[in-house]
Structure formats: C-alpha cells, structure tokens
Amino acid sequence: MKKAISYLFSVLIKEAMKSITSDRGKEFACHKQIKDELKIDFSLQTLISPKNNGQRGCNENANDLLRKFYLKQTNLSKITQEKLRQKLELINNRPRKYLNWTTPIEIFLQEISHLD
Image 1 (cartoon, rainbow, N blue to C red):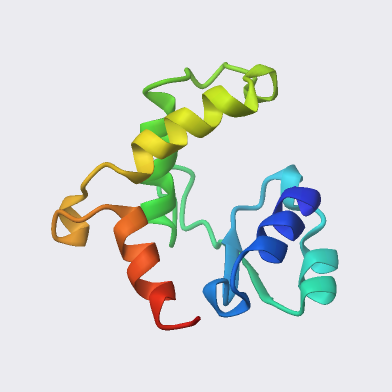
Image 2 (cartoon, rainbow, N blue to C red):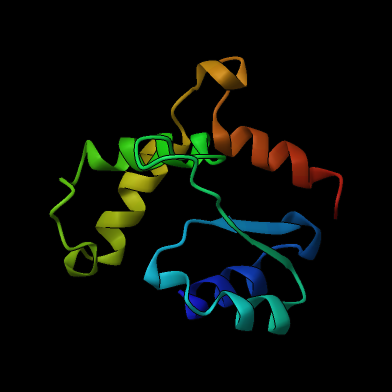
C-alpha cells in the first residue's frame, strides 16, 4: 500500500491530495511512514460499530461497486492491472446521485483544473 500511495502522490498535482483517511486494515500498518515521508495528514477511520463503516461512506460505496465485478473472496492481486483499471474507469465514470448526477472523475478534474 505504501508503494501504491507513494506512486499516486508522485503523479498527482501535490494540492490534489491533501489528506488520506483509511480503515484500520493491516495493509495500512505503514500509515506512519506514509504520513512522515509524504508529509500528509493521514487519519485512521474510527469505527462506530462493526456494521457501521464510520466516516467513509463514499469509499465504502465505491468498494461495493467494485464488488459488483469481483466477489469479496476474489484475490484482487491476481487480477491484471489492465482489467482492474477498466473496472475502475467504469466506476469512476458512473454518475452518482450524491454528486448531482455527475461522475467522480468529472468532480476530480473540476477540482484540480484550477491548481495548474
């Protein structure tokens, strides 16, 4: 996860990634290293209860959309980068009610357009 986040941070406009909020999964055990090396605010999600995903509803919704393509038992490390990229492109180009029927990619591009 550290390698993936570091890569993402290196290719994005620095102002595009202001903070990171993750769950407390073992893949984020390196959160302190990421915070220190990238000098970015890194917060761990507070779970209110096992059935309540706390403060990351949009993220959990995106995970649910990914699970429409890959069941929870699927080992995503065995999916090719190209196949995963195709599915993520479909997800990020899907209009969302909570975004006034715009897509996440449209919102992202709109947000970073003034940062150049």
